[in-house]
Length: 114
Image 1 (cartoon, rainbow, N blue to C red):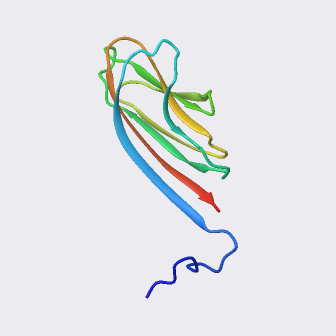
Image 2 (cartoon, helix red, strand yellow):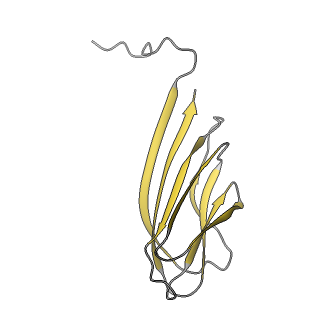
């Protein structure tokens, strides 16, 4: 029988959440599309991957935004994929730039302790 509420004797318990989804990304005119927001008091760390399955020269690029700021050097062109590991993640978003609409796969693994 499970002992609810007494599952761990450690003072802090580590949690790992993983999300993966695909969006159709058009030019957002510098507006950020919000993908995830931290609505807790926990410090969130994790790895974010963006895969742009658009057609080179025809569809948009995808720029990763974390905590409301563009991640330096993280603009993913059609046919490319990039990942980054970061600390203190409070929000994740994308900005699309260019013509057409790209199918963009986003996945992230978030880690925190409570």
